[in-house]
Image (tube, rainbow, N blue to C red; front, top):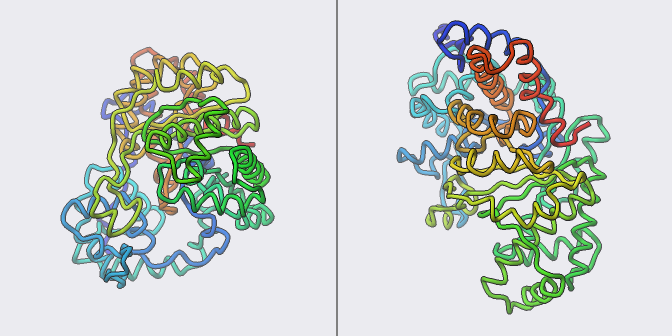
Length: 470
């Protein structure tokens, strides 16, 4: 390979000389800090098994929603990218063919965060020296395949090489936690996160089946509402015992409000008997989010709430491939009225911590920053999903810091399934936040001697403090 593809050392920095110089200095001080990964979707089995990651297509293309989504938008069929059909119908099984399609379409990622991450990991981690294209796809496949078979690229070796200090996974409330117990015993800092959506949201079609598994895993009968709550508390306790410090919840809307105890019990009975209507299901889901908040105030697990995605927007894809294949679309979200019952009850409780994530940028300055700038329990999560980009991060910092300050932010998390991209994602955040701070210093809005501590807070300290990580 000829050396034609390189990383710009000043990427993400402003072209204005004084700001760029300050950004360089700030970034140099935080670039090599360990990575704190408090929320993501790397499966614990990856590190428990420590097997070779696989072929280039399996590692870099098939599991990455950002990649698949873009290629599909340009007419590449999901089947041709190796996604398995729900009906068992034909899909591409040749990883080299999938990789060729990816390389032929690599130009689509210009200007996107995906392109920035892929460039970083391909050059810095895998030693790729040419931009992917149709003409070099096979050569790159062979190069990457050789690297991926090297013991230095196995998951645990990469854990050290990427500089990960702690990695938090996302696990169903009914997970056995056996792999986490193995990892803890072997001294690897991988922690579970309690994700109870399937067992607390009766609008899902798998809710009833999930309750049966909840009873099995907890050892608690869930035939009545009291038993149901005890089963959830038992699972939360098991997660804490396996090292969890947080819970995670996805919701379409931020409506979190309690039913009274009698109404909650009666609604649960109707749900179990099949007599509940859509209103019952929606109210009970909202109530159970409130109950999760109450339990977090009691047991200290940090509660994360991700709001504002209309999941599986493309019905045909959902029917052909099942849940979560990339057709999720942001929707407008209201927070101030929706969270008022919860915050009136727990917003000043010292045991409660709530981290909010949104796909509705319009709420940053209007609602989220004022809320976090008042309620001690609130922290604002990093720009999420469609907005974990250079400009998305800049817009976020512009919108929230003047009202909420930096120390009401939760720092950064990579929220990724693409394990090799973790360092690249943190690198972008660290560069952008240092450049943003440098701009404030250059304008006389932040003292230059204070900026290094703020850069460290955004890169490292705030994530540890927010998620109560030791």
